[in-house]
Length: 330
Image 1 (cartoon, helix red, strand yellow):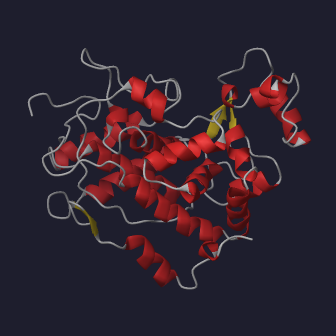
Image 2: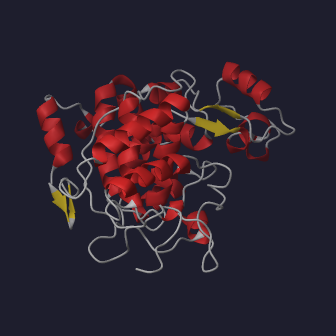
C-alpha cells in the first residue's frame, strides 16, 4: 500500500502553501526582478507561447533542457554554452548530441530581455521560467519560481556524460544520481512523469524491441501490440533517429497518462517501465495513475527542488549577455 504521504491534499490552499514555503532560498527571491525588469513575465510567456504555436514539441524540449542543465553541476545555464578553446561544453555530450532542443527559444527570450533590461536577467533564470511556462501551457501544474540565479562560467562534456541519467541504466543507478543532487526516490518517479509529453528517438528504446539484454528476443514485459507497432516504426536496421511519442495516449497534453501506461506495460523507455519493478516506486506509479492532482502537486514540488540544485548567487557567476557564451570582460 502507498504511504500516507502520497494521498492528495484535502485543500488546494494548503497544497500551494506547502509548495511555496519558504519564501526565499539563500539569495533567491520570488520578486528578484520585480523592479529591475518588470516585463520579464510577459516576455517569457509571449515567447514560449509563440514557440509552442510553431512547434508543439518545444514544451518537452524546454523542460528537458532545464533538467539537463540542473543535473550537471547545478542550475547554472551551462547546457546553453557553446564549445570554446577553453572547454568542450555539454551540447555534444552523448545524452545531448543531436537531441536537446530549445536553444533558439531561450536565445529569443534573452534578446528581448537585453533590449528591455540589459544585463539583468540570467540565462538560467530564463530557462527555469520557460520550463514552468511550457508545463502550464500544456495543461500541467503551476509552481512558484525563486529567482536570482547567476550564470556559470564554464561547461563540461565529460561531466554531462557522467552525471546525466541514461534510459539504459538500472533504476538503482538512476536513483543514486538523483541522490547526488539532493533529490530522492519520489523525485525520480515524479520527474519521470515529464515523459507524459515529448518524443524519443528509436535508439533510446530499440534494444527492447529485438535483442533485450542480449537474449535475441524482445523485452517480455513490453505490451505485444505496442511491440508490433514500435517494430514497424523502428526496424532493426537503421531508423535510429526516427522519433515516436513517449506517451502515445496524450502526446502534447501534460497529464498522468504516463503512469497509466506503466501500469499497462506500455512505457516506452526501459528506465520508465523499470519503475514498476520496485515495490516502492510501483506504489507511487499506481497512486499517480489514479490521482492526477496528486501527481501535479508532487511534480510542482519536485520542480522547485530541481530548480534550486547547485545555484550560483551573489557575486558568483555572471549575467550573460548572450546565453551561448561567457562575458569574458566581467
